[in-house]
Image: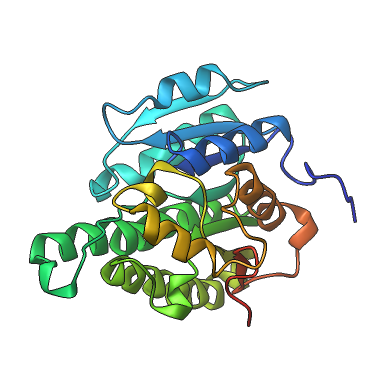
Length: 254
């Protein structure tokens, strides 16, 4: 066993979605610092190109892509294999629409969150697994759930957390299905992280109430999520699959 954080990652390509977001930027940088070649994916018009320009090492590549274009998924992993043999997918892309009441949730709110957070997760993970199976090589898929998969969520995010509960279940099902191919599938479940998504629509009172539920007494820094992702993508977790790694500062304990 090689205990370096780059174990199995150096010289290999990885795909990071949501790479222009707060956590995604930190995850992309962590992979680059571990010696991986990063394909950073985010929506058209996002600053994902500037994220890639700031990464150490390389070569890396930025892709602007709407993940609801399911036909484009295979091309993401073809692009990764052009850089280096594909090793891991870290899928962070998500949509949160926080409503003050469940009575305010529209059908469009529901569809937007379930389509991006759950539907795209399944089809992208399947495309990643096909790329690995075609190459007959082991690899890792890391999805992103939320503490809300267990609690149901706080602050008007019921639909978002329903989608993240689906991600937790999907992760376990994919782990069972893909284990015979040497492909491990795990999820990271963050609690409160200091990002624009977290703070959007949160009053000072709501934020204070949320922080009071975190034993460590603060929001996580985005780089504090990257370690869990690299662990799950690397050889250090070679016998871990179907797990939901709780990174919530103690807010969620199980």
